[in-house]
Image (tube, rainbow, N blue to C red; front, side):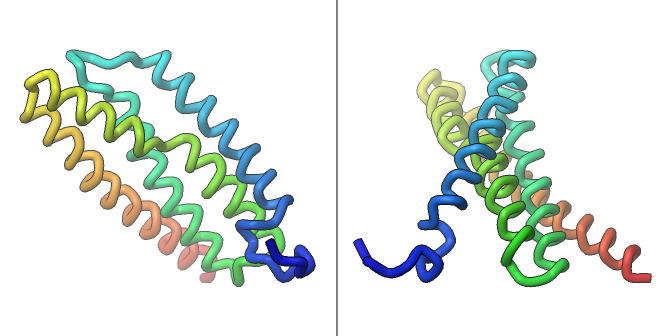
Length: 145
């Protein structure tokens, strides 16, 4: 461990930022759990997790592009990125549930559904991230006029 002052440490190792990520992650995880309880799996397909991951990908793309267009990653923008992006969206979305649900579908012999669910989430999630970035770009260009 270095004896360097806290301000010289990378942001992800500083206590205040870790606290922001923890707070955001707590609320993101609670939101995901509430959605999965409200919308249970149908025919063995965990649609709530699929929707959460796609929505989270869109919102993360929107957030990060909007913050990047506002200026450098410092001060308030960095705090928002960490609490909302790393924290909330990190807790809200879930790669582990995607992997487990895909493996369960495959293990239960529903190979087509397992492949479609796993690859579909990744592909649609990528498109959702792109859509979030595009939405932020359009909003920024309208605001710049």
